Image 1 (tube, helix red, strand yellow):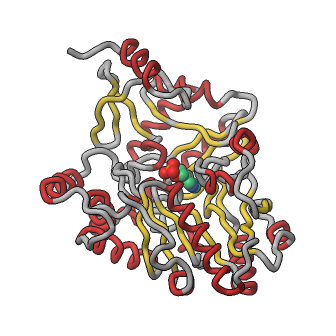
Image 2 (cartoon, rainbow, N blue to C red):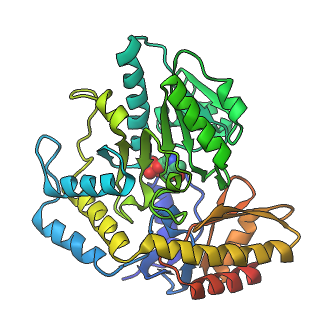
Length: 397
Ligand SMILES: *Cc1c(COP(=O)(O)O)cnc(C)c1O
């Protein structure tokens, strides 16, 4: 028998470590771009499990491919070859124009691999053991000790010091601040092409190009974190493709598996040629047949159904409609973002309250930074869903 919401929440709090202040919703099933809670209430999903459910719920062809893989083979370890990993890596290479792929179980682990790649690349050149990474203020790269060390957020870092050494911070979209942190020990510069958690800030073209040139000039690896903004979300398969600045290392996760937990770090020829070698890095689960069947299927469906082109079209419409809101409401400072990763910066109205009111109206939205309403819907939303979102959000306002 189905238990009521209060009982489920209470049992969860008694058993699951309290590291999140959760919203009082118990989500039970999804269909298309809608979610349903245990009371049967319907929500239009503009959160997508934090930019994960790119294809929404039960997208045609997705469940079938995964069920087929479950019936065939779930896991083998990296001591052997498997077909889905080979196919997924080939497709990711093709989509990115990069050279080699390492699959992980999460975004955080992809960041760890990227950091190790930069350290090893530099170590092979000069055998020094004091190489440095430049990261950005207000960035987010994950919660493990390495990823946290390059996450420019004092509140996240403070309780866990000492962190990994050799990290210097610069100001996002301020090229001179990056240049000022470069030393003869710098091995990598890591940044999100669009800062997500920090408040939806896209890199300016001048900044990204400038950082790319600095990396080239000093033989530093450029690490672009595409975990949130990649996989079609900006209207490009990877956000950097719009800028024409190619990373040496790219990290992916979130929508890479569209619901199956999987990440990857992807290396260009230069980074792949001179960095991690047998014995340097590993994972038991990473690249397992089930997770890779998801990646492979997602990349097929993206291509077959023109998902990226669709994002460009519906993203332009969303942008236009959000700009109308900015004009209409004094408490909306500005809109930031690209395609289907959008933020509304609020002033004088607590964003948390608007999120809760939206839930009452049957709309799921999330926050970023401390005053930004973040919209990261499934990539398959239609214009009518944008209209429905606006209707509900306006009521919440
Ligand atoms: C979510 C996120 C991560 C961490 O990914 P996890 O899968 O939660 O480990 C890293 N970088 C960015 C930009 C993210 O949005």
